[in-house]
Each structure stands twice: as C-alpha cells, then as structure tokens.
Figure 1 (cartoon, rainbow, N blue to C red):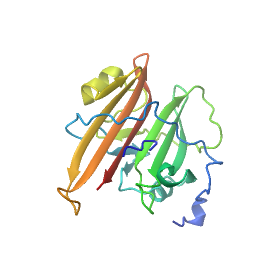
Figure 2: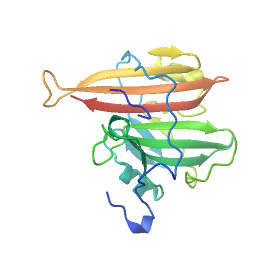
Figure 3: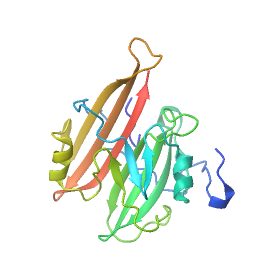
Length: 215
C-alpha cells in the first residue's frame, strides 16, 4: 500500500526519539491518496543525496541519517497503519528557505525505522519556524536517480522522467511497480516506487517520493 508522507542514539549528538510530534512540524500530506499507475520502466527516485550523504529508501535508517548529519530529532505520530516517524530539516537557499522531511512508515519501515519516503517544499520566506534544525553549509539536496529537486524546471522534469503516470492540477505523479526476488509466493516481493511533483510558474515547488516493498 502506498504511504507517502507515507534505537539508542549517541548522547554526544544530542539526538532523541520523540514520543509525539509536538516538537516538529509533521510532513504535509499529498493532496490525493490514489497511487499513480506503474507506467515507468524504472524507479523515478531511489532516495536522496543531502550534504554529500546518500539516503536510500528501505536501506538507510532514520537513526543513520541523524547520526551522519549530526543533527535531528526523530518525531512520531499516529498508530498502526497511520504511524509515521520523521526527521525535519530546514535548508537555506539564495531564494529563501526549503524544508525537508525524511520519513519512515511505522508499518513498513520496521523496528529500525528504515526510510520509506521524503517530502520537501519551498518556504514562503527566509525564516523557519524553529522546530526543524537548519542544515549547515550548502547541503545541495537532490533525488537519487533523476537529480531533480525544488526549483527544477518543468522542462527538466519531462526530460528526466517523460510523461507523468498521473496528472492532476498543478501536480504530476510518476509510478513504478516491479518485483524483487525473495520468499514470497508466487514470484517474489512487490515493490512500489513513486514521485509526486508540484510545479508553479514553471518550476518544482514541492515534491514527495518514496518506496515500499511488500509480500
């Protein structure tokens, strides 16, 4: 099922696992819940590179992300299938500020809280809300697989990904569905990978990407 967003940490890093989402703004929901059809021949994004760190869906844990970036608090909200864990960061840009959420489905991310998605959006002004730490330097985030990010032109999206699997208003969605070998009858595990992009005035202003593998 598509769920976009959807340990013990070293004390020296000042990281903690929050029991609720009170300390950090939760990731925004995608404006529509139906999954894009799997029209792509390969995954549109397999993770994100940020601050020279590769964060790969279903391979990298939230704990590893916070540890490598040396900042971040894991927050949580929801129960059962609606449970979600996340890290939230602000990124300074020449135009203002961006916000990045790295998310793990409570159901699909397992006890290690493996990353199952990311969400990012442009903020209206240069100032953040204070609940998401500012990443130092120039993190230069981009999606693994397409190199797209906030500010990418609509033309570059088409050049990288082709026609969208689903188009609705200012949003376009790209989907991939494939099989992964494993002990799941009759022919392995199902892998679903997705990317949602919102474009305004010819540039990407919001994106949501993720992946889940299930039997």
